[in-house]
Image 1 (tube, one colour):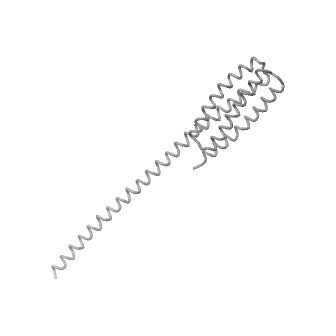
Image 2 (cartoon, rainbow, N blue to C red):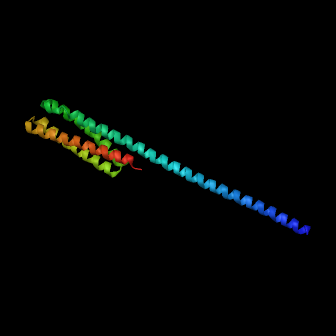
Length: 171
């Protein structure tokens, strides 16, 4: 009988060791899997935040440049032909800076912000045409057309801001 009890005790001990080893192995695999999930989640969150910050900087740059275009043209209405030529040269510089900012928006996306920014850039080009006509001939009609174009341009800034804000709020 004592041989059987020794055998039972040995099997019980062996079973306990095997169960403990299996539990330990399963626990370590589970911990490793949980750690991988945590690392992936953290990496994804950091990536999203990096994209958000890059977009935010691009959107702010665009909005600042768009506002600089509008601010630079607010006083054009009372200028002489020679002064209009100077204002046109300054506007062309600001327009190129705006074009650069819109190009960055094209890279950062999303497309809704890119469309709003492109509309703003097109209207800035139309402002160049209206200002050039005013610089050539400071007539009442040219001044009126320029002012209407400037107002239309200024109205297009708000949709850019709204689309940029919506894009930053997306998750």
